[in-house]
Structures are given as structure tokens and as C-alpha cells.
Image 1 (cartoon, each protein chain N blue to C red):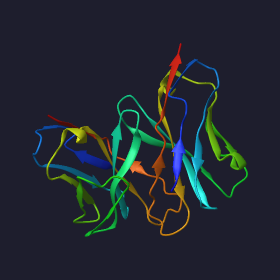
Image 2 (cartoon, rainbow over the protein chains, first blue to last red; image 1 turned 45 degrees about the vertical axis):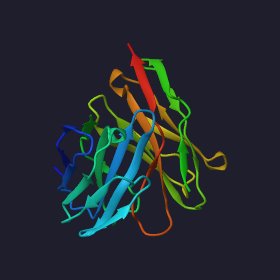
Image 3 (cartoon, chains in turn orange, green; image 1 turned 60 degrees about the vertical axis):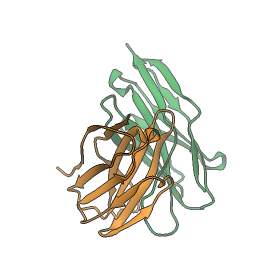
Length: 114
Length: 117
């Protein structure tokens, strides 16, 4: 079954440390996304990618970098983690040929920055 | 810029009743897609139902249906015969139809639904 898997599922990081969240999809989808979820704020788009080796800024990219080394893998990188980046992060994928834009989400990665 | 607003923070209903969750949106596009997603207690986010802006007929999937009022920029989610397992957070989302199909969605803040026995 097609799926989007994230790792780690949970992480505690120290302020100023580097954090990498990884996402792997077996949907054969061209588009991948990183969303952030905070209580009371819904889901907000951080970065997305529509092809390997290329990434685009979403609505809240500051403090985050993204990497898409292959169609299947998409990483979110926090070079200098800050307290305000404590949140749940969701990766998603979608089919470029699908004009509806339906997203398939991973399980989420809970990040706590201390 | 597009915007999606869910004004109801939480709703409580009795099992087997009908519930409506509200959502209003803002867009400059004449063509767009509206979605509802469900987030369960485990955190899993799943797609429920979609409405294409050019379609006048309200979408229906199982016991989920939509009340699309285009002049009011409103897309309500109706759940009939609610079940305990419908308890979750429901997100409204929108994708504009113009330009490259990036699939980028703008989400509302979500509505918590609690279904009581």
C-alpha cells in the first residue's frame, strides 16, 4: 500500500542544535510538502518540492531548509533549532497529474525544542 | 492571498445526530478546489471529501456531504448519523486552480468534533 513515512516520530532537541526530519513516500508522487501544526493554527506550509533536487518556499520558510535528493525522499532541516519551532511536523505527497490536489499525509513528527 | 476560516473551535453532539461544520474562504481565483480533512486522535490526517468550484452539485461521500454556497464563499461539512468514531479534528482547506499544479493547500485552524453516546 502506498504510504508516506516520517522519521523520527518524536524528537527532543536543544536550542541551537541541528534537527533533520526525514520523509519517504512510496506513492510515486512528484510533489512533496512539509507542513507545521501548532495548536490553534491548523497546518501551515513550510517548504514543498515538485521535482527531485529542487525545493520551493512555502508560507513560513524562515528558520527551515529543505532537501529533495530523490523523488521518494524529502527532508526538513532546522540548522539552529529554536523554542518557537516546537510543533508537530507533517510531510505529505500528491500526484502532479492529479488536478484535485489531494494530499496524502505521513504520521507526523513531534519536535520539542528545549 | 487565499484564506480559510473555521469559526467553530469545537462542537459537541450526541451520537446518531447530524452536525454541520462551517468554513468560509477568500480567493481571487475563479477556479479553485475545496477540501475537508479529518485528523484522528492518533494524529493521522485523512482526506474526506472535495468540492470543485465549477460544480454546482454538492459533493457527497458516504455520510459526509458538503453545503457549497459559492456567493457566500462558504463550504460547510455535514455529517449525518454521527458515530463515536467521528470524534476528531476537521480541517477545511483550499487550493487555487490557476497556475502550476503545485497542490499547495491553505488550511483553516480546524474544528474539534466530540460525539457523545
